[in-house]
Length: 249
Image (cartoon, rainbow, N blue to C red):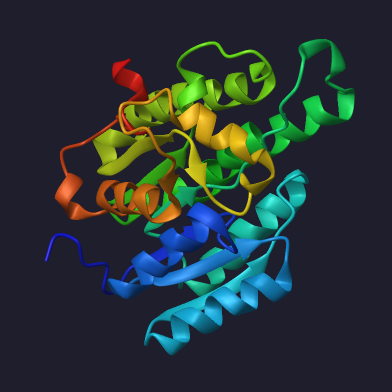
């Protein structure tokens, strides 16, 4: 079946909560061996346990994506677990500090670049060659609707994800001829553990969309699973909005 992942290994960054966790569960449900990754070992084990209890296969690798060598070690360990080839890479992990540009610290600048741009770059550089050698694979990047338009207080976050959207297209051009598909999803306001601190602001932002409400982690995960699957076999370099229609406004 086109949406089955039996015999495939998937690495999902930031998969101990939110969109990443929902994606890991859905991929495992469809037969993938999922490598769960994140900073919190307790939440990582809980995600792996949930997959095992549902009859799926999963392992956890802790990783600090703020550190380039830790990212490379994540790739090395993922390749070791998968027998030398990761079939699906989901670059989901991201940090999203909001606030006025003059208040952005050097530490925030470096952290956002490291996690949102550098880590996906390193993982693709480390994992795509084995996909090419194995004649196929899929990369799905998670961006954001504010990579497509300006919004006050989101210059740092939005620009980092705009960079990831350009990388999506560049990688599609680079690896597509080798049957490695690279695409992205662009979520809008989404209710997750990470956005809980936004309070009513999340609902207010969602009210500007045709859907009029925040999406769920599962909504975004469904789109990621589609792009990773053979059902999207002729989709390269696409950025799929999962934003309640905000792109239409």
